[in-house]
Image 1 (tube, rainbow, N blue to C red):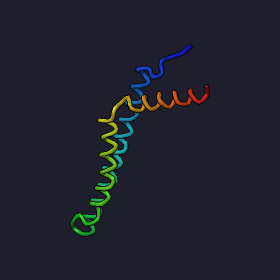
Image 2: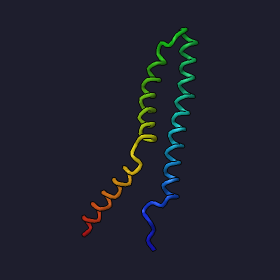
Image 3: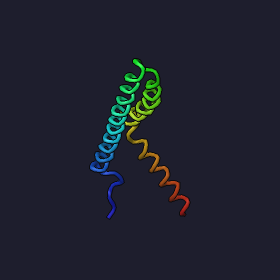
Image 4: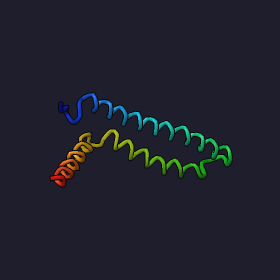
Length: 92
């Protein structure tokens, strides 16, 4: 018995996993950086050093958001199909 490579159920689960992963990443960013900003404000009365982790991690969050919300959904599937063809060609 041969099933479809990706059923709608599998696609929905993969998409849900990607969304949950992003939201967990965003939640960690907000929680940790809120603490860093509060610590920075408490220590010196302004944002002296907390800006840098906000910026660095923020770039990572932006990249993750682009991959999650803008990235081509079929891109990974095409890569997998191409690799499968390559491996099958090597076997024969």
